[in-house]
Length: 125
Image (cartoon, rainbow, N blue to C red):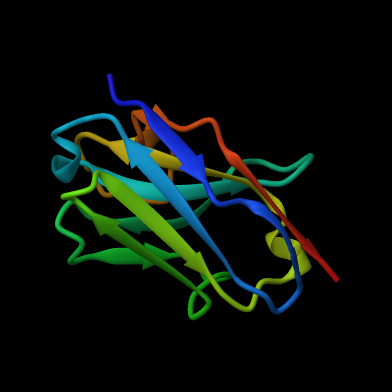
């Protein structure tokens, strides 16, 4: 069982930046694909970004491409999401997720086996 704990959320003005981190309990963290998702009030959880276990392949939602960067440190069992040029529509609870066995559906929540508890990001206009 992998435990994931997110941190780094908060309140920021539009145009600002935040860096989210996700710490994993599993020593085999390096074998998992890792993703970030977000969920705004009244909306479904949506894909934000994903990195492969080796960090050689990344995917981004079109809405965040060019503004957000996902990275991982397998030695520290962490994955991060650097968010720049934030917009009010980025406001959501952000979740990190771990994927034991990748089937290609990187944007599908059902691809992921473990989830963190989420961290709130609020962007004011």
